[in-house]
Image 1 (cartoon, helix red, strand yellow):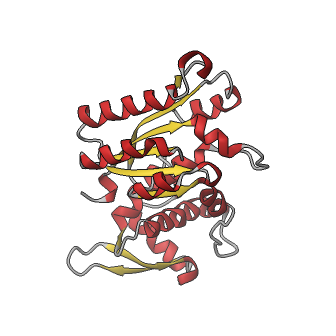
Image 2: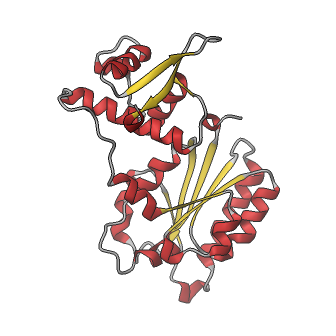
Length: 252
C-alpha cells in the first residue's frame, strides 16, 4: 500500500493537549495538525475528547475542521481517566470494525496510551503520535511508529518556501501549494516524486484545487510552467512517460 492510499483515524485527547498550551504566547491552531496529517493520507475519522465547557473557545475551530467533539463531564464526577478510557474504547472498536482504516493518530502525550499503541500495532495498524513537547511522555513517543511535535509544525509554518520574485498573484497561490506539497512528499521520504503523487497531495491539502482554474489545460502544463519559472526541475520517466520532480526550491 502506498502512502497516498493510507486511511487515517484521528483521536485527540484535548485534555492532555491543553496541558502543553499553558504559559504559551502563541495561539493554538488545530488546522496545523490536519494540514500535516493530510500529507500522510485520507483522514476519515476525527474525534476530540474533553470537557468542552472548559475549552469552549476552541470549539469553533474544531467545528470548522469537521472534528466530532466528544463531551466528557467534569472529572470530579466521572473519574480521573474518563476521557482516556472513552478514547481507547472508540479506537479499539474502530480497529476491529473498520479494516480499511490502516493508520491511527493519537493526539496526546499521555503515557497511559502506550498500551493502546501496542495493541493497535499488534493488529497491523500504523500508529502516529502527535503532541506538545511540554506534555509528552518519552514512553508514548518511543512506542509510536512516528511522533510529531506540534511545535515543529509551528516552526515549519513560520518558514514559508520562497518563490521567484515578480510572479503574478494567481501564480504565487498555486505554486505555493505546489511547493508545500513537494515538501510534504519529501518529509514522507519519497525517493521518486511522480506527478500523480504531487497532484494527489495538492488535492488533499486543498480539496478545491483544479489546475484549470489557474489557467492550465493539464497538470503537466502546470508543472512545465513551474519548471520554466525556476521553481522545480522535471525528468520524464522512461517506462511510463510521466513526469517526475527531480528537485525544487532551494535545491534547484
